[in-house]
Structures are given as C-alpha cells and as structure tokens.
Image (cartoon, rainbow over all chains, first blue to last red; front, top):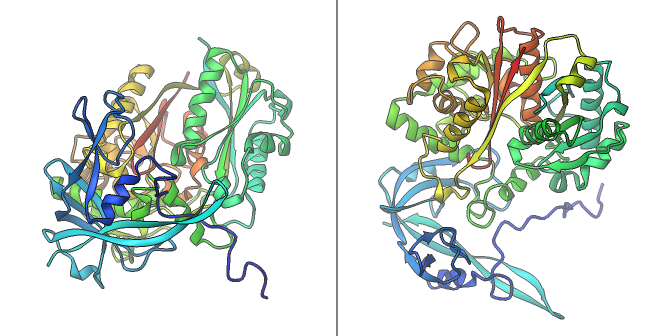
Length: 158
Length: 388
C-alpha cells in the first residue's frame, strides 16, 4: 500500500563530511581537493603531521598549523571487495585498497573506475580521484544556500 | 575497597527478533531477575544502560530512565547510558564496578542491547558509517569492518603464514560451542568444508568468518561483596581486573595492523590488577566478530606466542580440554552481536563458568576473562573475573 514512506523511508544519514567555510574550520582541505591536491595539517611549532587535518596539534596543542601536500599517487598493498552489506549510497563493486602513499603515510581508500575486483592487483599503481558529492542545503543566518561538496577515492593509474 | 560481584544475569533470545528495543530490554531484565529470585527491583539503586544505536535505529535517546521504568526500578545512585559501540556493555560493567567498589552505589543493574534488524535491514550497515571516523573512513564506505579485517588477515597471513583453514577451525569451534545455547542466534554446527566453501563477504573472509547482525539484550546485577552474601549461597564471582586501552581511531593512524598494541596494553594492566598472568586464565570470551580477530586475541592476550594464533586454534588449544577454553557459549559467531549486549552476555557466561553452572563447563574454572574491541579495532576493553 502506498504511504508517505513508500519512496522515502524516514531515515537519512549524510555519508559525506560537512564542507564549506561557513560550517567547518578545515574547509581548505576540500578547496584544495577541488584542485586535485590531497592535503593535511602540519604543526608549525613541533612539526607533527596529522591526518585527518586538525585545528589543534594533538602533540603540543598549538593552533599554529600549516597545510601541506600529501602524495596523490601510491601503490596497492592489499585489497578486498565488500560483497555483503554495501552501505546505501555506495556503488558496487565496493572495493577497498590499503595504499602506500609514502614511507610514512598509508590510506585505506575506496577504489573507483573498475568494473570488477579482478581488475586490481597487489602492486598496482593508483592515483587520487576527486568527484562531486551531493551539496549540503545549509541555513546560514536567514539564507538557505547549497554548499557544493567534493570527496575523493583512488583509481588505477594506467 | 569493597569487592564488586556479579549476583545475577540473564538475556533475551538473540537473533532476528519480533520485538522492539524496549521490549528486548524488558525480556533481558526479567530473565536477569529470574536468575536470582532473592533480588527484587527495589534492591537496585543504580542502572547503567549500554546501547550504541538507539537514536539511529530506534529513534530513542535518554534510555536509562525509560528502561528503569519498564523494569520497575527506581534509582537513587546512578542512572545513565554508556556507549562504546561493541564495547558498550563491558564499559558499563567497568563503570558499575567502580561505582560499587568506591561506595557511590550499592547494587546496580547493567543492561545492554540493540535492535539492529529494523524494518529495513540496510539501515544497520548505513548507520555504521557513523561509528568509524565518519568524515574520513565512513565516507570511504568503511562502516562495520569486514573490509578492514580482511586486510588484517591478509597481512597476518603474509607475516605468519596464517591460513583460511585455521580461521575456519575457529568458526567450527564456536558454532559447536553455541549448539546448546538456547539464547543464541545460530544453533547449527558447521563443518570445516562448509566454512571453507562459503560465499565471500570480504575475500578472503567468508560468511562463517563473520558474526551476524543481531537483535538482543542482556543484563547483569552487580553488588558489593557484603551484600552479595545476602543474595546468593554460591561462590562469589568478583571483578578483579579491568582495563580499557586505545591508541588511535582513524584507520590511517593504526600503526601495527597485526599486533594490536592497545590490546596488549589493556591485557597487561588487567592481569597486573588481578594479580594473575595469561597462564592462569581458565576460560575466556573474546571478541570473535571475525575469526581473524580471535587469532590475534590469542596472541596479544598472551595465550600463545605472536604469530601462532592460527596454529593454536588448529591444534584445539582454545577448545575444551585445551590450554584455555575460548568462547565457550559460542561467541559472537554463534550468539550474534547486538553491540551493547555483547560484553554483558560474555559476563553472564563467565559467571556461570566460575560458579560451575555453564552448559559446557570448563572443569574447576577459577579465573575468567572477557575482551571486546570496538570500532575499527581501536579500543580494547578487558575484564577479569575470579571466584573465591
């Protein structure tokens, strides 16, 4: 029987971060991402590099942080495909890879742009892929505005 | 300081249930009171409710006074909810023990559970994107962690030669242990062959390597050593060691994937507090949300050498008659895993083992241990129980 929830079940979870300088102090991460840069924050006082980006240094609590670039290319060390329980909003195949971006930085990221898990192998080179995600309809003062958003994954670097 | 003792425990039937969250709590509370007829709701002065997903999946917050009302409990010392995802129940037991030992409370019901099979079950997977670091790991589609544990296994296999057959031996053992557990989700034995040929969930992890989605609740009553003697003639089951350790949360900050340092930290503190070593543990309920988790837990709890967890399982050293019986009631793999209920279910089984009341009894068990990890394998919670 049709009812008000037939097409819109009564639960929504925004699967992407709050972006936009009206809403977050780390908005530059997303602005840099739009330029194809993967960045994070480094403490000017003690040199600690943190990921995800911060507004205070977890080592010395300084607020004096600078933005630095992380590598956007890396190597697949391990991967898997989630076959059961793929969350709503994520396309199949949902493939995750443990990627070595540098000697000191690894990331577990979604791999996009392949049709099957058979298309990825240990040792494959991958690169950053930035894509649009749904904007946030935000109330800023009395105005309602759409805040454009992007997010990232990795894709094969052929 | 006073002792904190477990004097009653009970749980609802776990599985895919025809009941709401508050109904599951009522079933668990009733079962707990029925376990020890000497204790009445009027004897309880505090309640701690462990639940991780009640807002998302049951549209309900402010749980503790609600559960108290439904169980006829009027509190005077503490009335609050505790949340640490899969470690919520054990966290609440630690806090209750602290309240009782310090004298801030006298008798506390710790009750925990979840309603995870909502009318549309995709909600559970979807909602778990908010239990890892939502903006950085959840946004990558990493919620409940089979993908993460698949990679943990691949790394453990590369370093130590751990095999898929060794993982299957754990699922076979825990399914067998759960066979006569009338409250568990699965009561069917599986063969090694069935485990090995099951469909992949996050390859190489297969169906029987992963615990299910579960509705259920469980409750225990804790009281002081003095009061416990009024409530029971059985040997007193005391909480003698507790620890909770975490080193990082975001997946990018994990450090070592195959040696869980926070688990080692927690184990060392809990053993030291209890005045025992890993060799003294007779029975353990560890967090077997995935078979590979149980392998690493043998190692980092000190039941075997690093890298030998797979062989430990294969040789039956974690089974009855082995070195330490692990997940004697079937574990998460058989009982299921309603997050806030799990640590309490573990406490109930350990208390039964130490009193000599278990369905599958470890002979003359004196020391029992429970362990949970929560989130993306980031927080580790350990309790050690001992009897007089």
